[in-house]
Image (cartoon, rainbow, N blue to C red; front, side):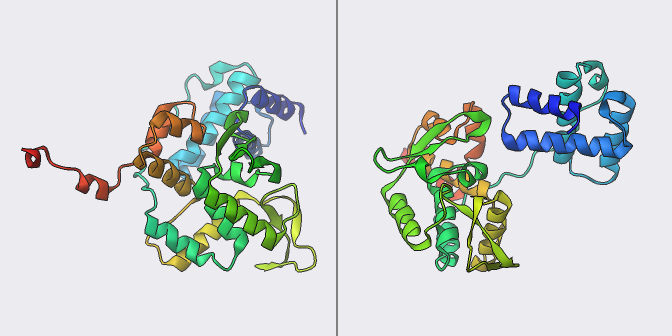
Amino acid sequence: MTPLRQKMEADLRLRNLATGTMREYLRCIAAFARFFWRTPARMGTQEVRAFLLDLVERGRAPATQVVYHAAIRFLYVETLGRPEVMATVPRPRVRPRPPRHPLTREEVAALLAQARTDPFTYTLVATLLATGLRISECCALQVSDIDSRSGFVHVRQGKGAKPRSVKLGERHLWLLRRYWEVERPLGPWLFPAQRMSSPGVVDARQRWASHGVKPDTVRNRLHRLTRLAGLQRSVTPHDLRRTYATWLLEAKVDLRTVQVLLGHASPETTARYTLVRPELIRSTPSPLDML
């Protein structure tokens, strides 16, 4: 590891950024250095602009360009102390994405029905829905985080290293106990990764790995369940988080409580996660009908 990477990694930790964000920033800087085969410490505005323009010409998504821009900006402003390098480098414009709607109860039931024969996947998907955790938070859960006595799931690896707790419902607790009895996962991880003897085949002799399941594994399994369920939409782990927030608000849980449960620093962030579904809009009364 180069001294520059060591210093940037330390700066990222001091900023208290999420582990995934730190890893992504370091990856972007490594790609920037490989593009010129030179250390970024010996480059400047001209090289930054050329690199970012190459991303545009290769058709990289605007959201991806923004991540590279943010990583390079952090490097020059915070780590190298050369803010002038980025002073004339415009930040890429990202057009608003179409809103993603929460899942309906029928869609959730269809997903879970497809996972009935796989207790590991069923329980993991149900946990995402029952807690509203980020995928990284769910994958990092340990057995000791399930506090059945107090009725909480403790999130110790929250975004920005901010711990929090969410409710452990009775049905969720029953499901976790059943999962534990059937699967007997190797602690301390609640959802450890599974060793594969070949693609798609779990190793029968030594099933559990010594680390938690990877987020990409969960995304792939959820994609497969979506296809098997015949849903006319893609479903991501974040959609389950969005569904959690929306269903709570529809159940009259106040926005501030939902904000705390999701681990958001701002209520504006929470509000973006929640959309009023068309069926609820149709069910609202018209003032004229009240006359």
